[in-house]
Length: 565
Picture 1 (cartoon, one colour):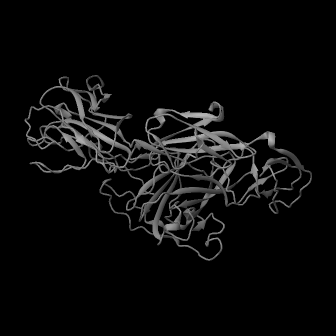
Picture 2: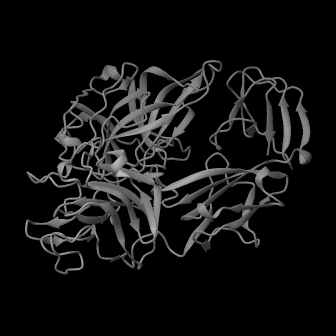
């Protein structure tokens, strides 16, 4: 793997991080000696790739995707070889490229990070699955799934990206192969295949990508000091809402204030204001309407041709954003602007700028009037564009979340398909199935609830867990400050010990690694495996076990207590 450092213009882009000594390249595909094998693979047992009806197309190929990335300013992947994968429409959402490693990867109880370079021909959410076995279970197949890891970002089409997968597990687990899932979406609506390319699989202690494009760039280093004492920003406002800046004491030119979120609604007319000390400067406000990580505005030296994300300004070439004539000493007061009626609810980045007769969102770079010298400043905040009501729904998760019971509104109606007023508390209650009790509920609130938790560094949703003990008289009140977007509820239920029968298998003998026992009970039943030579595949649930693949069951050993359902 080729890793280089590059200098970049005045903080326009994040530099590549130097890889520390503990970083380890697991596979770079440069030579056949860097891996044992590569092939198409699908974890679904009924996949045509497992029924020998299809073979898939996974192959190491020459890298012709080695051009300079204009946004980065360098070529992010100059390798000579890369791994090509044909994402088949007939594969499941866990179809991908199985890379058998030259050396096993040992899981640890602390989080490690696997970095993988991706280049996809279409946008796709990806995943990494670790296959291997436990040291104390040598009979365990090397294709046993030991972890599923979903990154915080998805792959965007048309450029190399470094995608980071957090992994962890119990000690003594060796990962023999990595399944790189190139598109974890269900393919039921997919009408054709598409190509994905993979390179440089690296184990690291770093959670941040080795390279990434900057979002919301500014035209100077973020650490640049503010040196003027006669000009400084005190607060920024949206209507009656405000965020303190204190530029005079903090002595910075750039402020990223993402903890304070302004509120606005589609169709609302709002006023962006800057409380500023000084004279002969102008105010500008930008809203990233496309949520694409940049503030767009088209302009010339004589005027603005398309304002796009520039929503308000007090002065540019003798006019303000309302189209009225303005004088050079008009100050930073900006006209009001309207949030579009059809703007999609979500979390958006907004920028306030004090500058002189300049609409560049990154700051004035005109010779003799740099923003670094003229006493200006830039402030980034977030805006929650919301409707009057938000959606509420119940979801399931792969480790059993959402099963064996229901979550309801206080009026007894299922939550899915319901709405509730934005910013107002409301009550929920749990309804366990027979033989089960509520354990806890995961509550996710915000936007893009089934996607990444951040978008262009902007948080999209938060999640917290409510234990059963926090329910009062069977109900829990979701606080008003958590009703800041749509609500996703996943209830977790556990077996009711008062409804469980005890039973013991006195003698069950199989040869090591062979045989299968399926115990069916009318109600959930605890069973203690009394005599197993080696192990057996058990179609039930091992109490305390982590997430397992339901169709494959789990292995059990002598004396292990299991729960049959």
